[in-house]
Amino acid sequence: MSAMSMHIMSALEYFSYAFLFVIGLIVAIIIVLYTIDVMQTGHAIRRNYPFIGRFRYIFEHLGGFFRQYFFAMDREELPFNRAERSWVYRASKNVDNTVAFGSTRDLRLNGTVMFVNCPFPTLEVDAASVEPMVIGPNCKHPFKARSLFNISAMSFGALSVPAVRALSKGAAVAGCWLNTGEGGLSPYHLEGGADLIFQIGTAKYGVNNGAGELSDEKLHAVAAHNQVKMFEIKLSQGAKPGKGGILPAIKVTPLIADIRGIPSYQDSISPNRHPDIDSIDDLLAMIHRVRLATGKPVGFKAVIGAYGWLDTLFTAIRERGDEWAPDFITLDSADGGTGAAPMSLIDNMGLPLRETLPLLVDKLVAHGLRDRIRVIASGKLVTPTEVAWALCVGADFINSARGFMLALGCVQALRCNKNTCPAGITTHNPKLQRGLDVQKKAIRVQHYVDNIVHEVGMIAHSCGVPEPRHLKRYHARIVVENGRSVSLHDLYPPINDGSDVDLAHDPLVRA
Ligand SMILES: Cc1cc2nc3c(=O)[nH]c(=O)nc-3n(C[C@H](O)[C@H](O)[C@H](O)COP(=O)(O)O)c2cc1C
Image (cartoon, rainbow, N blue to C red; front, side, top):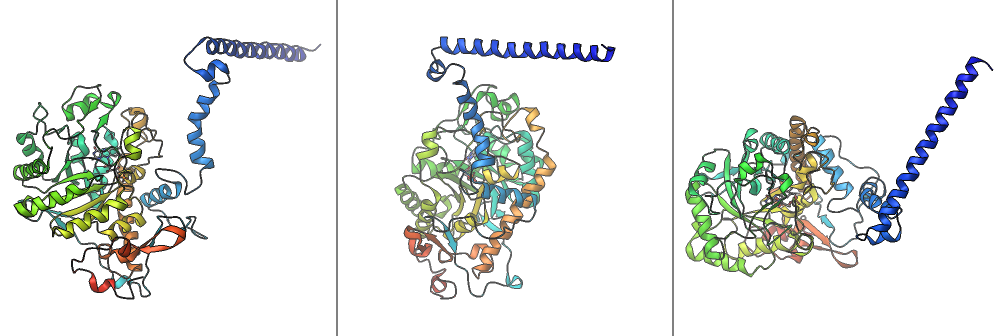
């Protein structure tokens, strides 16, 4: 036998021993796991189906990924389906966002919105740009808000440092505002130079006197930043009405704890309402106090469930005088997003925007406060269709949180509460944050705003009006039963404030 064949023989012998060793090791591991499963009493499936039962957990975990990429249809997933997500991704990358062949949306389904195109659409030369709108005209420092599409409250803590930096820089170039959320004001919010809305959450992070009460001194300090344009008192948010903010201990890093004024690595749970706001009078007093202390517009954010209180509130304002009114109301939808919430609240508490937006707008008109109080709507308004719907119903501004998360690269992994966000947006793990390039994502934020406003403009022009804020209820229809649609004007007859009576009966614009 030649030396060469000897070498081949010994190599084969070596590999067969290695192979037998690996097989032996695998069998040993299976036997150990099998024994552990039989002995343990915590998991019925593993006890009844030792070893094999473990695959259930692996598949359950992997199922989410497989469904998202391979099995779910374009219009199937929640909270946002693939078609919606890709629209936002493409808009924020500023790449071609046209689709081919035909709509993949089933237009017969209840709730489908259809806009009423005009036989003679607005020519580009006749189109108008969206004018800035003043909020709080009677304040010492009224706010001239430039963009109709803005960044909704997301706290520093729920969001990572690079995410806040990218939003702040992107908002500055896009000319939209960035709401701080309830976690206080950080240097990262200020960094880009954007207009900011400071949110006063129920724990009053950032403006707390240390005993859970509002500190006028700290309010002054926040208001001293020229960038802070308005103050928003958070009564509730759509995803968890009646529950305060929840930031799990793992996300309360020393930096975040310092901005909030709380101990690090302990759960940050804010009260389920402002301890000092327990009535309409308290609410009006708080609005008045913050406005007096800051000289800037003040409003509140709420999701509506019970709604009789709105009449009580608006009547009280009319009795006291318009100067007592909130300068804006941010109306959140029951299907809004959050960093963390109990399932029973996220699924079943509060009413969705499609019911509450017409209700709020009509009550403001009925009480003669429509021009005094601006309406900001939020809740899954992430594509031009939804934004245009909200404008038709009567919103002045649109806020989005998750739309901007998608613009930052969110893949809807649903892990905002785990500190393991794979896109670096809601995690404080530096390794995961590495993927989020602040400059590049800031440009995406800008493109997203620009493309939303552009495409909502296109819808407005198709309906025959010069700009989005001219959209009215009669410009949209909604599919009800049997695939038939009904005009929003008939579904929610607007209270006649004289502004659109003639047009509502114009055969060119009215369906
Ligand atoms: C990660 C995350 C954090 C949020 N933090 C706050 C917050 O601090 N205060 C608040 O009022 N709403 C908060 N929200 C709710 C949003 O501001 C918004 O009202 C809601 O998500 C609906 O808008 P969307 O459907 O465009 O996301 C948060 C939402 C998300 C997704």
